[in-house]
Length: 206
Image 1: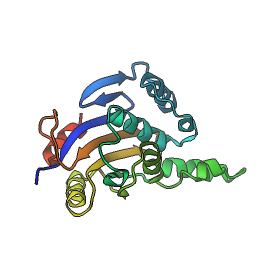
Image 2: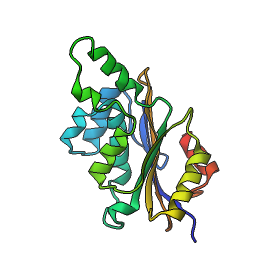
Image 3: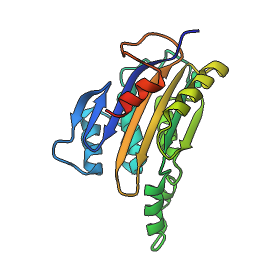
Image 4: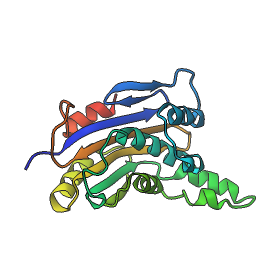
């Protein structure tokens, strides 16, 4: 059996948006989170009105996934063959705190629905028609060895042929980072190094 391959990877943080390690969009004016998300939304010609109702973590994961999959042929695999596996360390604390503040006045149902970390995975699944494995792990830091092992098991023991995998987090201090990979069970890729722990460590630090 061929080894899994990373077809593409995307990183979004307060400095820039990178695709396969190359800058796609720079936050040259030091825009805050909300403004930078809007800049990415418009720069990448995204059209999805529900985006503006999402919590920060879902917005972050959504734009990263949208960029990751914008050139993908969604009909190459069945929806049930496409999985999503994400992780972070802060769970949904950024949104939890906002909801806690709202209950002093009138609790906000619109905020409450985002008080689970896996909601970001759900938003991505709905938009991109992913109906396979859907898992969200809480880890102190991105455990790349664990992620590689988990995906290898997923590919070898289930019908999964494609997985969106990585790290999506907005913490209590509004620091944020998304790192997503498009990983397929087999195939070819222009990315050198590919699906190994060492290589993913390298590209995660870019």
